[in-house]
Length: 258
Ligand SMILES: [Fe+2]
Image 1 (spheres, rainbow, N blue to C red):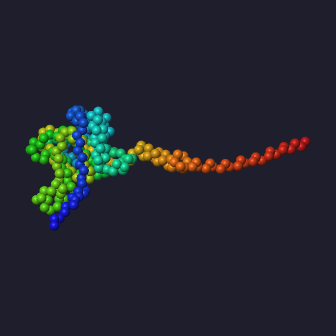
Image 2: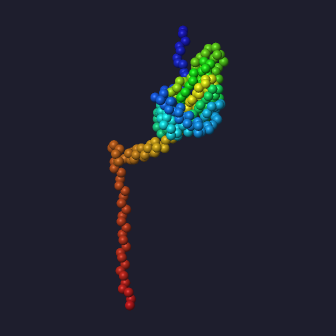
Image 3: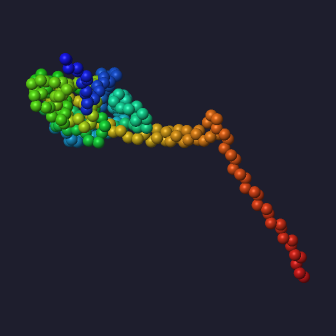
């Protein structure tokens, strides 16, 4: 008798949706100029970056035209990514709340292993990606599964059980991943800067949609009152009118005694 293979369950899958931003060549050229202007005025900050420039976390509030256009396109992709992995009904009254910042890694610059606590999605958008001078992993983003690979993985090389996955996206690419997925960026070994936008997207309640939902719910509950317009309902009994209070007869005025 032959054993029967029934199913290969793939559980705890890690979704990494990838997009190409529309008209990215023009947007990238414009945003590089906007970033140059920002770098002359803004000191930047140090987070996971080593060397290079890390802007404030205000990418989605910036007024520069290419920043705004790109922010809008990234939000569209993040909304699409969420719909692809989520229960549609669960998304009804929710919205994405995004933070973003610019990373400029010069030669030797890199990002240490980290994750992005507090967000649902994290993402990286690629503006300028110099080819590695060494031809190796320079400049690549590498994801690290918090579950280590089981012993023997090095020999069998199963695509399902490895704990590292590197990617070198090209300009115009948006890579989205769960914020809890650890990652790091290999040092840039090229003379040209590596320029990316990093993004965090939290799931929040949408007050406007909640208000609409409450109005719709109230309307629905009215519809369920028998007699309004529910089929077969009877008109609700009119409230019994209270009997009018009898006015006390006006007292006859006694003529004033003289
Ligand atoms: Fe990151």
